[in-house]
Every structure is written in C-alpha cells, then in structure tokens.
Image 1 (cartoon, rainbow, N blue to C red):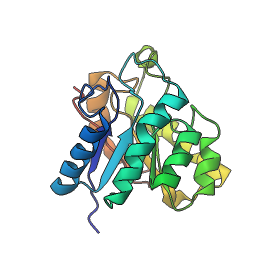
Image 2 (image 1 turned 90 degrees about the vertical axis):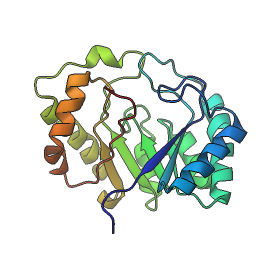
Image 3 (image 1 turned 180 degrees about the vertical axis):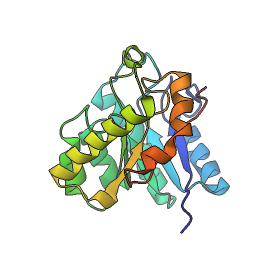
Length: 212
C-alpha cells in the first residue's frame, strides 16, 4: 500500500484562509470536487466552518446547511469523504450522509461528545489535530519551549483520552496542526522533527496550505 495519500480540501465557506470562498456555492463546490477526483485525490475533506486565525464560530445550523448537502452529493460520485468539524452532531450527520473520516481540528477538546461518537463508529477514521484554542484566540497561545516535544506530548494526551474512552487505535490519525497556535518558525521546526511525532505510532496528516 502507498504510505502517502492526498487529501483534497473543499472549504464550503465564504471566508476560508486558503481559497477565499471560491467554492461556497453548491454547484462550484461539486465542480471543484469533480476536478479533484479527476486529478487523483484520495480523500475530499469538506469543511463548513473557517478555522483561519481570528475566525468567529458559526452556528450548528449554518454549518449543517453548508456541509451535509455537499457530502450527500459527493457520496453519489463515489468519493471518499472527510468531514472537517469540531461538532459531534455534525460529524454524526456527515457519517450518515457518507463520510468515512472525521477531521477534528480540536482533537476532541471542543466537544466532549466527539469521543463517544468515534467509539460508536469503529468503521470511521478520526483525525485528531493538535489544538490549544478556537481560532479567535489561538495565536495568543503560540508559546513553546520545545514545540516538537510539546506538540507530541499534547497529542499523546489526546490519543490516550480517546483510547481510554474505547476508540480502536487503528481508527486514529494525528495532525500537528501547522499554523494553529504556531508561528512560522514553529511550523518549520515541527516539519523538521516529524520523526519524533512518528514515534507515537499513528499515521500523520500534514495540512500546510499557504502556511509560511
């Protein structure tokens, strides 16, 4: 099996960091997804809430309206789908609509019900990102003595919590969270020390779009 797979990002938002809302419209979102599928991406990650630095949270209702119709349509296209959400209710609806990955930038910290959902759906892969705070305030917490070690240790805590709750270790993927409560220097240091993160024994997701 190829050890590296490619995740295509589909931001169904008006204010995302990477694409500036170019795929906010449903038709444009599906068109972009078809392009990514034709280009060979392995997974399409659908997100309805911007997590750019300084972003305000949106309501559950708004998030649901943005992502579930898109996921339903992508399932018809035969895509492998990831839902990018911090909310267990949204993740649960996305699974029912066809998602097989949950990409949670909070690693379960934003919603205590997320771990229960992961345990209840052993067929689903769960991506736990390193996270310290919501986007509005996260850069205030970009303080580290040894960023590679601290990110590794904090991700270990998240993994331990999930496994203690009953998650299968084979479900779990870790993400060091480049750009989330990190400076550019922190990002480079993490990338230069991925071997340390790999010691945790889980697949690693790297999301580095336009992060300096």
